[in-house]
Amino acid sequence: AQSVAQPEDQVNVAEGNPLTVKCTYSVSGNPYLFWYVQYPNRGLQFLLKYITGDNLVKGSYGFEAEFNKSQTSFHLKKPSALVSDSALYFCAVRVISSGSARQLTFGSGTQLTVLP
Amino acid sequence: NAGVTQTPKFRVLKTGQSMTLLCAQDMNHEYMYWYRQDPGMGLRLIHYSVGEGTTAKGEVPDGYNVSRLKKQNFLLGLESAAPSQTSVYFCASSYSTLNTEAFFGQGTRLTVV
Image (cartoon, rainbow over all chains, first blue to last red; front, side, top):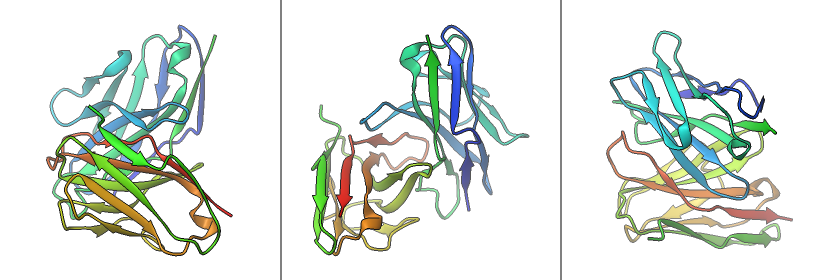
């Protein structure tokens, strides 16, 4: 079975500082990995994805994520946080060539708060 | 371009009542999903569909039924609502290629009293 872990329920960072939101995954096979963001009372919005190739993926709003196969991680990063980045962030995984490949499995979410 | 639209946005049900949540997408996506979101538990897959006329169970299917009679619509039914089904429900859709992202609706906040 595939699973995603977001070990931190809450991350606080000062505006202008770099931010990291952690994600690790457990799969049998090669994964497709995704990050989504959810603002209050809204649906999830796609940020970025790792499919293959370069381990550093760039996405919307200045976010990037680094795929690390040996550590089975896909941490979300941003060099300089904005107050408007405050939101709930979800990591998700699909496993290629598995019986459940059509399913997108989500982590439990990390609440990011950027302090002014 | 509406994307994924969920109806209704809010609903309060009494225990034992039934209701249907409607999801409509205008992107010609093959795959559609229903998730529920509960605090500290992320999104859990209830049911999904890989094409018109097909449905499959996800992680937490008990107490729910679904139908996909038309490609653009995916209905989620609660036959006899229970307080444990109080949640925020999200519909999503995607193309059938596995490397594509899913698009989400705005959510339906359901309270069962």
